[in-house]
Image 1 (cartoon, rainbow, N blue to C red):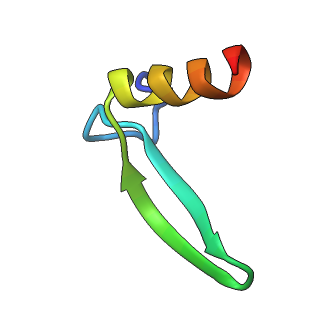
Image 2 (image 1 turned 120 degrees about the vertical axis):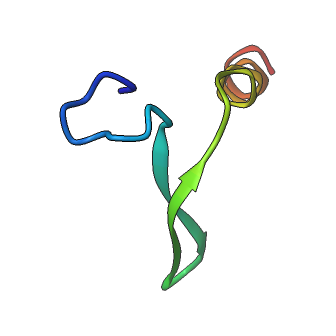
Length: 44
């Protein structure tokens, strides 16, 4: 995702659902934060 041709800043941008009908556009997260969340949901 960091090497996507449309990605200029080399950061991974997310569009997140904050509540039903409400989104947060262009939110960034570090690799460590992403892996921490994945571990939380995959490992329990």
